[in-house]
Length: 117
Image (cartoon, rainbow, N blue to C red; front, side, top):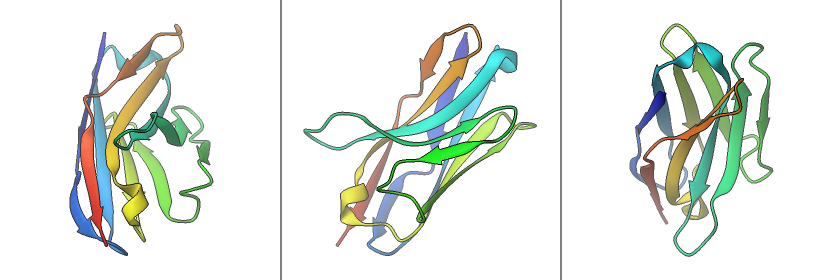
């Protein structure tokens, strides 16, 4: 079992920055990749960014390329999402997701990000 806990959300003005963290605990030795998703009110949950645990390969949704950066600290079992040049349309609950080599998938509880115009 793996537990994912997000932190770092909050209220920020447009153009500002936030850094989200996702700390993994439990049986993390089989971690394959971790990612951030987000869900705005009335919308479906959407992919934001992903990083592989071993090689650190990354990919991003087009809507955040050039503004968001995903990174990891394997010693701390933590993934970060640095969000710059935030826009009101980035307002959402941000969720951390972890994929295991076994095929299991885990979600965090989410952290609210609100960008005011």
